[in-house]
Image (cartoon, rainbow over all chains, first blue to last red; front, side, top):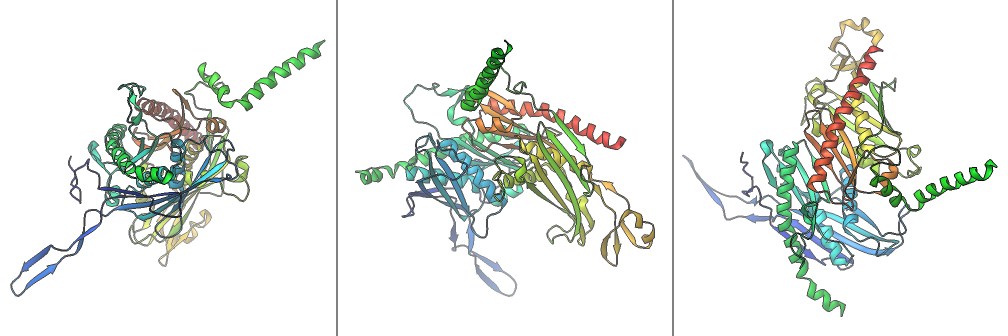
Length: 273
Length: 302
């Protein structure tokens, strides 16, 4: 079954990605991550030749699917931890700021998922008894919000120089009837589809080790799931199908993340001198 | 002469206890290497599970579910409301999850538990995506009146696998639910107490007798801990605090995957581990289905 996507993408196509680091001056590290561009096209016009009159309409409309954009800021490591935290480990707190209004249950859930995900990629034993705050500001939400926030938070943590085991790349896969699967859905597609899964994988590693040496249980390290959150019922096979597609896409995503983080590296080094 | 022996016994007992407190991970790993857990369960075995229906007399449907010592009390209260304009012929389900300070030493009075809103959100997601409840069935008069279902789940004892127990109690409460009788009085919906049914016969009854909700695919869940290559089903809170990678799989009765929830954790889940978790959940779904059916039939005999 082929599903036509409103923005003309093919099923495996992600929206254009954009990532910029160090955009906030007061934060120790910050990044913005956006999936999709919003641009206006005004050159289209339509002629309606009717019996009596000819009207020329200029249409001004959103082309593409809109974008999801998230801003992440990292403060820390700051001295002291919150109560009930382990004094032998660094703690991470996540504060989620929605675009409008107060935070509700969904945002609370995002906070916890993001916190647990970041905890599993950061090396917490290096700065014990400190707190690192990650603040997520949603700028625009058009589907795949949580993956977008995880990618932004990850870039911001790198920007702040927080020690990490590896990066995390997040992707959203939608599953339709009959095992059809699309990547990086817009909000409309998320609502329309049978089910979707937010998947987070480790980034692919560039290493000089011989191929196969980093295999865990017969699979490369980057195929392990850090986080998986699903909505809507799907068959087990559909889930594994999503997993496969997500892994393929996460390789591309991690290349992009690496490229955008590398480009800021020389400047960082000169700052350090 | 018996005294030194007794103290020796005590000291050896103390040592195990001290070892458990000082090196909890080592303590557990020593057990896991022998394929057993400190509470004498095998790794893939869930704790004893019981359901008792109708635990709250004043509610329209209620159930008390216990998995090991994790205890959840679920109660449903129904109210008549005006449906929203977007879905005029649908009712509404609102789910709340409470963790009072009595449930765990980690929950302090005055400070709400961090886990509570997350479990509540997970529950409402699971119940809506499993399609267990047909919201159209909750409609009374199209566009005018529909049922608002308030499901409240109280955690009485939090000893691990909170979501599993909460979902089980929710499902049991829904299968215990009796929709009350109401009648239409001058365009207004009035709840009828049972004894007045005959007197108010001139009023137009909307639903004549108490009926049960037909449940679609019933979701059941199993939480597993991933630690190294071990998979531990149905963890206690002690296990959850020591080994932090949790995977919750929800399957419905037709083995559709309703949710696969893994919020981070130090251990990465590879395909084989995910498959093992799903296989364990399949077994558990069968067990839970039987337990639920027994509880329902036990209720009918009463």
